[in-house]
Each structure stands twice: as structure tokens, then as C-alpha cells.
Image 1 (tube, one colour):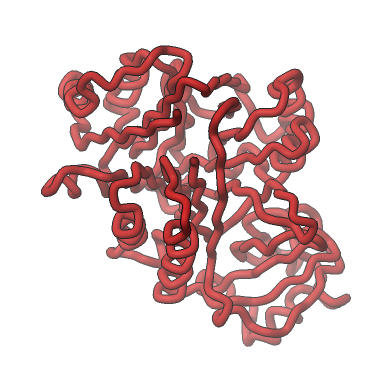
Image 2 (cartoon, rainbow, N blue to C red; image 1 turned 90 degrees about the vertical axis):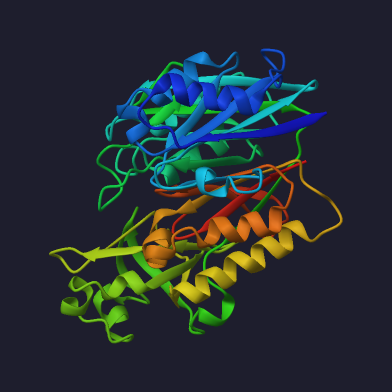
Length: 392
């Protein structure tokens, strides 16, 4: 039987006090080693003060995760919500089960030059067919999550992967990111966990509601990974001009309120951030833009974003089955849109989850399977999205 438990602390300066806080919450909840996994997310300051490493190394089970500039967890006792959500917080979900088995795989140091296909094959070869693969990747400029999705799907065909990209509190979320490994926080490394046994995951993704997606579909006719060059046979600048987006407006931040919804043939749509026009007039995006895909422009606004998250939670949690645990990775750009209200989606999740253990963390990109036209799941990398893994 699968069980889940939540711990949290806002003690950022004293590792001993933070550990005592977490241990007091856990009480006698220390399942047998080997059938237990901790998933941890925290602000990078918990790494600087040594709290994160102390917590990880004190646990009698392996702990993995990533840094995030804002996290949340539940359920919590009445009056304790403020300690369990916010920026300078650490949260950890503990998952255990008699019929579960976890295998942890670390990458060692990786860089932009790392062959992701070879890396995934080395890490995952001979792993059988797990029910779920968790992945935590370093900052988004180090490892291509699109390449990772492709490589994992080749190494473990049909196995769903759910993961996030570590972020920090810097303007671009990528200056001081860490992946949490059983040996403590690490920079420039990737960690994966294969989960075997009686765990059934279900996946949900939302970016913006359908009524904010503009009707006309365009087709990508030239691209190079995350660089979009031509749309419907014309330079991408012409595509942007059709929405009133000149180069000067793009450079002044007009792209931040918009999103591209990409539909690859046979797969479910996903969102892409438009980052900037380069000196050649090509558009840098937050992930790969596969040639032949359809794209639609969408408005990325606060109310629309919250509406999409609410619709997802209603779909995920108002059904006949009740999950044992909920894990949410949510794009850091959504926090930017929310501004001072950056806890709004955590509070939505808390409202819908009730007494179901959950953890929430902002990420620099989200890996979550999407349902293809053939009814199969395909691992996909998302931007600007609220992604949820419900485990039964």
C-alpha cells in the first residue's frame, strides 16, 4: 500500500533546529529503508546555510529534488499554513510502500556539451519497465529537456517521466540552481528515480484556457531546436507582425504576455515561451519547435492562467478515484505573471486537495507526459504550465 507524508520548515539559519522541526512532524513515521523516498524542494538559501544538506543526510531514506524560489505543501495543521508555503521555505514529501521499489540514478557532472542520448542510455540501460520515472535537471541552459524526453523514450519505451528543472530567485531563474541528490545539493548534475511496483500515476497539464487561444493555426516550416525561423514559408518576424508585434515591441517585453501553443502531429498540445528575437530575426523559444507542427498564439494573463489551473484541479480531483499523493511542478513564468500573488496557485491546490498530501514547487520547465492521438502517453517538455502527477 502506497503512503505519503508531508514535512516542511521555515527555519533557514540553523540546521539543527530545521532538522528537529522536520523530525518532530514525522514523529514515528520512519518506514523501512529501501521502500521509501523523499522528494525535497527548497529556496537556494537553504543550500547556502547547510540546512538542505543536513536534512538530506539525516534521513534514513534517499532524498532527491531541486531548488525552487517558492514552494508549498499540505495538508498542514490549522494556523501553520504560512510555514508551509512561500519563498524561504523547505518542503519534503515522503513516499513509501510495501510493494514499492526505488532505484536512484545520478548522472555525475553534465554540461551543454553532454550527449543527452548517450547519457540517458548509460543511466537507464537494463532498468526494466518501471511504473514511473522521476527526473530532476539542473538549470535550463545546461541540459535540453526536449532532448531528454526523446532519449528517455528511446531508452525506456512507454515509461512516463515526470520532472522539473531547478530554479533560483535570480531574474532569469538560472544563476544559482541545485539538484538535490542523496549526497546533498549539487550543481550541474541530473538525478533520476525509477519507481517499480504498486504505484499508478495519472498526469494533468494546463497552460491557458481554450478561449485565450487564438483560432488561426500556422505551421512551422523552418526551425532549429528552440530557434523558430519560418512560419507558413515566411520569416517569423512576418508571423509576429500579424499580431502587431514589431521588433521594438518584442524587445520591450511584449512577448511576455503571450504564449505559443504547439501541436506536433499525433501528440497533445504544449506551451512555449517566446524569449527574444536574435540579430538574424529568428525567435528564441523556451523549448524545441519541431518542423511541421501547428502553432497558435495565446494570451498569457493572470486570470486566464488561474482559470486553467482551476479547471485542471477540478478534472483531476473531482473524479471517482482519490489519489494518495499529488506532486505539482509549475512554471516560474507563472509566478512572474502572478507577481505579489505568487501563492495563488498553491492556495488553489490546497483548497482542492483537502487532506490529500501534496507538494508544489515552481520550476524552470516541466516534464509531463501528454496523451497522443493514438491513446498512448508521450513524454513532453512544457513551458508556462501547471503540471500535476496524481499517484494512486
